[in-house]
Length: 326
Image (tube, rainbow, N blue to C red):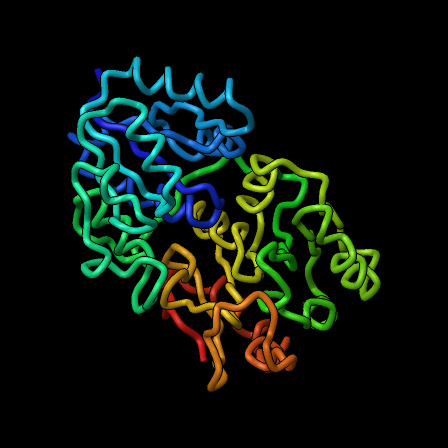
């Protein structure tokens, strides 16, 4: 019988960073660990790791009850709450698991039996070190630096082998969207390019395709997360805004350039020895805003396509690179 269950975060990027810490638990603990996975990411998690999992569904009252029943029937001694939300702690309390460990914030201290003071971890306030510090503290394990992650194998989609993947979207908002992907496509004339993202990224994709329609494949809105992982696994490298797809590339070990503007690579740099975060902050950054309050977006705009193309060559040629690029 498994003795602990870990509730993973709801956002794909946070979920992957959290999963990387779970997978580095000592084997004796990992063998007794089950994952509680947001329903929409359960299939992807099944590809990325071999831990048993229960789907956490919140789409309606009945699905929530089903998730609660599954956890109650699991006989778990401890639940680790990696999300910082009130709703996750309320779910844990309703599940009847005796030990409920998480950060005491969002007015949820009374729901936790093993609360961690928000003053002893970083959480979403100061963001002075990588978010995986918080996940390590909640999991009661030593911190493992994100740049030491070795990646995990995924069966590659050979139809796009050797391509460069662009991820021009960011659901968070325009302050995360680098404007120079079309210019980068012109510079990387030696390579085929695959564009990945959601339907909402289709307009950005069309702007890139216009630069070189004969060697660019637009798959925005046409792939599942599992298919995205397979395409990235066969790619030469990935260029991405700070987004969930950036973290997916880092998790599977594909060379990745992460482009940061309003957010901070100190807080959410991508995983892996072959990942690189490009960040040229302004006095006002990181602001963590969705839109630029000054309407200039210089923190992203001054990262040039020439610098990104050069960085991609370096990251693809090296087995390990510095964590930040300025």
